[in-house]
Image (cartoon, rainbow over all chains, first blue to last red; front, side):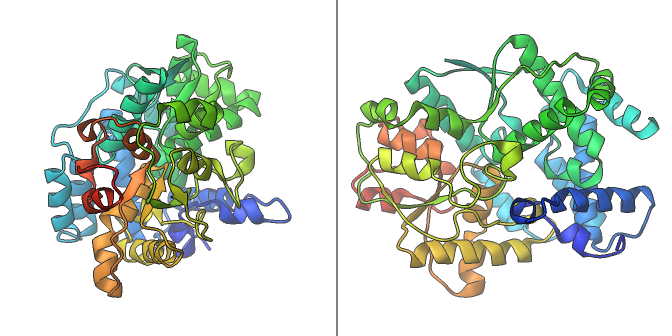
Length: 121
Length: 290
């Protein structure tokens, strides 16, 4: 199960959790399976999704906030999807929906500490 | 009314129009928003997908800062709201987790803050407070209210509206003088966080939603989530091309519709940032030119 695509394709919409007649929190089960598969270093069933999540968190760990442009550039390099959505990205930039310069928070040391302690605890 | 405001990363980038229109509408209604100083990203879908404790610690730091301000928290983004509520609930149900997480963020947290989506604040005001501000009723707009997922699910976490047949956006659209389209996909999922990694899936889900709204008579959509809005708006051209369907459904944030009805200048509402331009629809509906 830890190798399956399913655990990565689940986007966490919480519909099954809401509707389960036995009160099983299925979305949380999916979270637990993904986390276990990462900790056990299992090859992810869908690497593009796990790479995206990892790239997103790298941006948060580095800056305290997500910076879309650098996060997307890193994701494209890591997932080798260099040309997907380039035109859309350009249009978004022209609409002022993408900032070139990242926002960095003052408490970024605190954020780095959160990540560090979580890894070592 | 005064709240600690958590814009979140989207409202500072892809959803700048949501931030602009939120600010303008709250000012009009006398709701004071004080941005949480030095807030960090809540971790969104990626944190809870990879690490439960990171997904709790990140929003908890923001909640602890808000608590020290002595204010309740308001978040326009459905995902940020959901992550804050989830983190709050998790530590309130587990004293050991709370002490571990507060040690990790280096700040105390007692859980006294109320955490609200912006839509809940507006809904609590009600039509009696909203309607006197409506200078230009949005007649001729047929709006499909789209709630998506994280605003209303799971109900035990969010404690807001109804998970199967939510009504808060419906009530607001009616208060603004527009027609509320009755349709069955108001709480379907758009694929949200998979927009970058699995665009083909998101195009399929977005197609189903937009196409259903159109079939049910909508000429526009309204959302309360930057991820929903981004998928409905940014992916609409792809959907039209791939499925060979003409949709032409502008996807507004509810704050943009409020701003239009309140006759707030378009430049304060970020209408020019929408990929599917609402200009023709608004002119035709007699609302205004953009």
